[in-house]
Length: 303
Image (cartoon, rainbow, N blue to C red; front, side, top):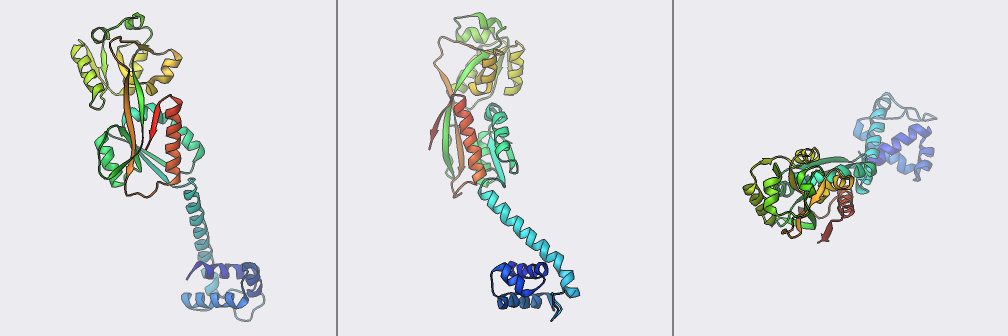
């Protein structure tokens, strides 16, 4: 049993005869007859009363008709879904991200993606870098954004971007009025110094040094720290993208530490090497991510 047979059956019912059905389908009447004979062999008996004009369904045919029409509708919907998936309008996008990256970008990316792809199911999973690499390798997520550098023999780098890291506090914090500030002074006078966990490296070493020099240290998630900073409490290092709107609105200010060189953090977008191509909707999500990163002035290095 195939769709050609079901289409012939449905068309005969709609047109009232074999000849009209053949014209509507653009095939010969013997072809229509052959399809119905094959279909009748499948269902176990005649579907039409022989010799009736117009064609009349037998009881068997009447019982089979709604199922045939439902099958044709499902096939049509399946073809449409496949075509829309190919065009990026249906399907699933599964993304993995570190918390800091998600906090910085997803509140702008998700609405933009939904506006273009309202029928695509989107799932964002948050984890640390090692867990995210495992999820990409296992196919749990289609791609992930993690801290750079990384090494994994089964994963490919799609792009990486380098974002400035800034020291921020409320404009009402005592440190905000100081034009000259050393790192040790910041650590002592932050009251408290908020510690947000970063990947190991130069930045991680710097944060540990600040924590060792500060009499008051609080470790908390980045979004909690951001809200506390706005109230006037403490100081912390943030990726600029995460506090860009607060800096522009004057809710936070950047503190200048004379002895510090410009700080930055590199992130990488990776995917499973054996995947031939990412679905169109997933590529669209990545394009929106790139646009948002560039909008915030972050340098992107495609691979």
